[in-house]
Length: 69
Image 1: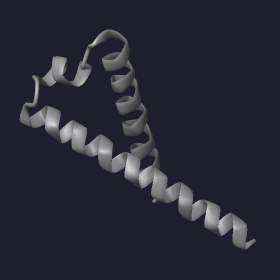
Image 2 (image 1 turned 90 degrees about the vertical axis):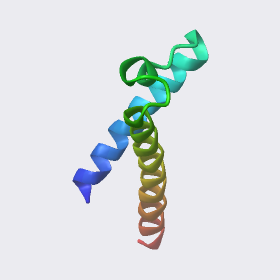
Image 3 (image 1 turned 90 degrees about the horizontal axis):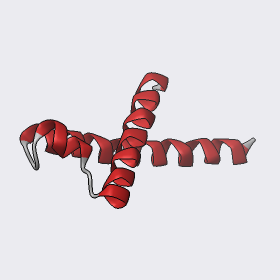
Image 4 (image 1 turned 135 degrees about the horizontal axis):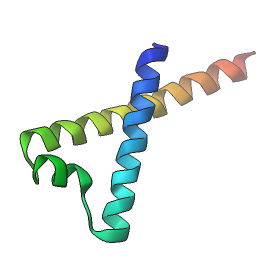
């Protein structure tokens, strides 16, 4: 599980950086690398979204475990 959490965290960070670039410079780095809405771009976007959900879930579980102690 720890391995999955680290991958999810890094994908979430990458997604956050990409969104920062989109907001600041109108530059979608994922689309620049793989093409706008190409299959690879969509896979990256989906993985980043799932990773964000996983990180949020993991934090909620950790918080519940911490509160039970």
